[in-house]
Amino acid sequence: MRFSVFTAALPQWTPREAVEQLAAQGWDGIEWRVVDQQDAPEPGFWAGNRCTWPLATLEQDVPRIRELTEGAGLQFSGVGGYALCDEHADVDRLLAATAALGAAQVRVRTPALGTASYGELFAHARTCFADIAGRAARHGVKVLVELHHQTVVSSSSAALRLLDGVDPAAVGVIHDLGNLVIEGGEDVRAGLEMLGPYLAHVHVKNCVWRPAETGADGTVRWEHAWAELPTGQADVGAYLRHLTELGYDGWVTVEDFSTDRPLAERTAANLAYLRAARVAAVPA
Image (tube, rainbow, N blue to C red; front, side, top):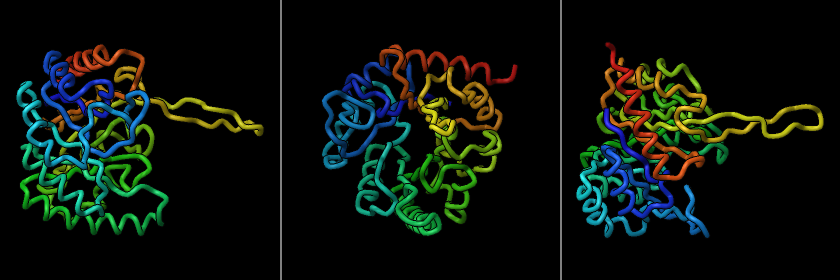
């Protein structure tokens, strides 16, 4: 089991600062965020993120990305793409760049809820990923589908329905523990087991639900908030134990969107916590 960080969680660092800091702390790899983002007055996770490579210049940036990553002694855990499954030209660009980097796997997004009926969105996504699988195989890379709230694939069972009949060598699933606190909650171990050969990658973050407001009629409305790995509602230690017992030996990529600690302290604490949890997960 190897540990990496998704650069969406590193908004204050430049790519060079990110690889230098992560390498010095002892991380195994990095997962680069690739998207044309909005500017922001201050660096943020989703806008103005300094540790993001623009999709618009991805082909030109590939040599630089590879030089920085390999020069720091880090490996690619994957590429965090934001292209939707029906944005065919952008998906093809991500596939080609992933192959050029030697990164092995790249995320392609599934449709968000609300733009059409669930059945229409799901059928459309199934058609798209069946097609993408062939294109990914030609590039020698794997496409990743992330379990994500407010999309057509928020659970392991939904992912299995989406990919039924698709070659797991070409398309796999990112199991995301923190996202499942928000939506798609199934028994964690059962979800991992049911994915079988489709379990290709793991994202780890944590989350809590908290009361947001109380209406005039007494109805309490709740909201979710990101939390540090040890303090959220998901049991990260038990998660690593399940993964170990099921024979998973791939990447565990951290997406910590909590902000209580400074960034360097946060990343170092996360690695120490995961290393200790990995040791505890191995049977005596």
